[in-house]
Amino acid sequence: MREEIVLISPEEIEHQKEFALKIQGMADRPQTFHIVTYGCQMNAHDSEKLSGMLLSMGLSPAASREEADVVLFNTCCIRDNAQRKALGNILWLKEVKKKRPDMLVGVCGCMMQQKGMADKILKQYPFVDFAFGTGNIHQLPEILLNTLETGRDIRVGLTDSTLVEGLPTQRESRTKAYITVMQGCNNYCSYCIVPYVRGRERSRDEKDILRDAEALLQDGVQEIMLLGQNVNSYGTDLGGTSFPSLLRKLDEMGVPRLRFMTSHPKDLSDELIEEIARSRALCPHLHLPVQSGSDRVLREMNRRYTAQQYLQKVDKLRKAKPDIGLTTDIIVAFPGETREEFQDTLDLVRKVRYDSAFTFVFSPRAGTRADTLPGRVPPQEASQRIEELIALQESITKEMLTSLVGQTHQVLVEGKARRSQGQLTGKSGRNISVNFAGGEHLIDTIVPVTITDIGANTLRGQIQETTIEGEKQ
Ligand code: 5AD
Ligand code: SF4
Image (tube, rainbow, N blue to C red):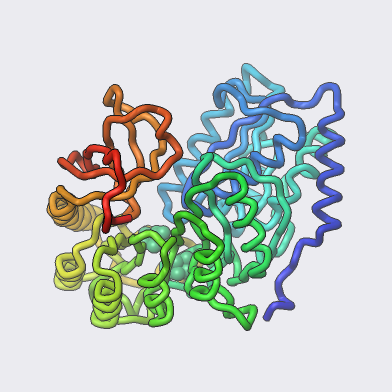
């Protein structure tokens, strides 16, 4: 299995560095860049790598999108509205470019990886100067150089089963960092386009991951988020390692805070639950997408668990780690979903009592099995269902937040609160925003905060001057 994966060689990365230096040396090269990112954390992390490469070519961040010499759209195509938003914004730049013809417009990310998209960009978006797929990210220096020299470079050439090491990365945050542990997905949930645009599952070597973590710790990073479409199956393509074992090694290394995303319920093993309960570094939060509470719909979705099995895993998790907060993804109006089946989803939400939920109306994606299924739910009915679900979740969230009042939580301070003067904001281990009064010197540190009140989806609190025993992460 490992042989099918294209490992980008260190020589190729060195080669790309030469292209970057060549651009750096050009007298009339672009000076500034702006990256517009859509979609998930994986894309956000890819954008950090794209930024790192653009910096290595001598470009610097522009003050705004309109003023940038290079504008790069890192796109998403998971739902139709994500794709339309990206295409709309790309089109809007056509007008800006009329006034600034030297501006270079690039498009990359999942949307580019869709069948026929490179052709569409080539023919229908003549103002797009360069474009590439998720497997070509490391070639940005070569692509940009070629664009500067020849006027245009549109490619989605490489297999999407690539693994790249050693790209320069410009982190968005000083204290939080991403590490990709695996890419791709083999699950083929019937509604999902990810396996088609991100390719098969492939895990990074453990030593590469641990080396990245070590470097981040040296750099003062407080929180590491491990990324993968299905992190729980990390290592199954490598042999000799597993996700729980990787988590344990990172914990032993002294990472202050550790999170991971996303977990597939079918792969949430007892061993992983034990590790979640045992680990000092792992935050008490798990994102566990359920998608539906109806067994028939789950079967049609190819999720490979029943509502009962899901609930049993939640039970085990809560027994092992009582203070854990759960979040989820839910799709309503999957083809053929009846009112009763939707009620099953509401029932499951009432049982699990998530901290919060990302809710979506089913969006048909070309090439997926669900796109061919009969029984499309009318848009009006779909909107009604999602509103009902959101209202239910909001009431649960409010009750959950209220139940935390009086507790003390460890908060990683991210910055000044946007709306309230003199207030700081940060995230609790359970991944809830907490606002409290405090000096700016606390930014980027982890402090204990006692919760005094709730806001809309946030908590308000008071910082503890001394650490209290038994406090929650
Ligand atoms: N329609 C609606 N929601 C979708 N998701 C993935 N594909 C679709 C689709 N075609 C949702 C799932 C997934 C999240 C990232 O996006 O809930 O967990
Ligand atoms: Fe898509 Fe399912 Fe893979 Fe998640 S597990 S990326 S929903 S196919």
